[in-house]
Length: 151
Image (cartoon, rainbow, N blue to C red; front, side, top):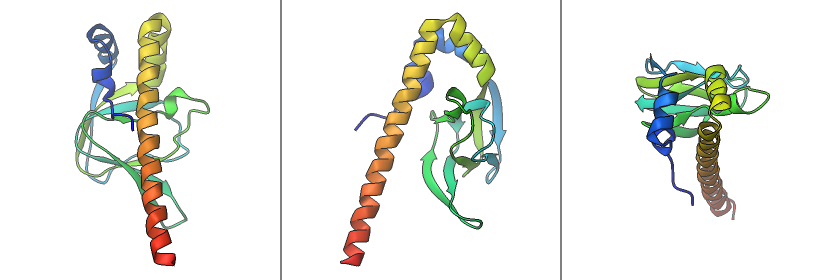
């Protein structure tokens, strides 16, 4: 299993400083919806404190939590890939403080500093690989539980 990485600590200090120059500190109260699945993905966050739940709308009335994120975690990766729409929704599970980055500014920075861009993309890919492995593990657990209750 891949190790969970923290985006900001994955960047070498000079690159982290250049990225952080674009950061804006934001906060979300508990239960605030940060973004909705299908909405325009034009920014991302690095959580400083608090907890965020990623969710998926199952039907008109139900949402299912698919992951939980905490301090140091990347919130949002859809800004990096067309069609630039959120794949999930996100809600503050507790009061959240975060660094917010506008994707257009970050992408411009990546164009002017290709080394930073490559490191950033690799880091986001590592985050996605880790989350995919965690999801696969959860699916296997659910499958095992289902088999035990069916047979």
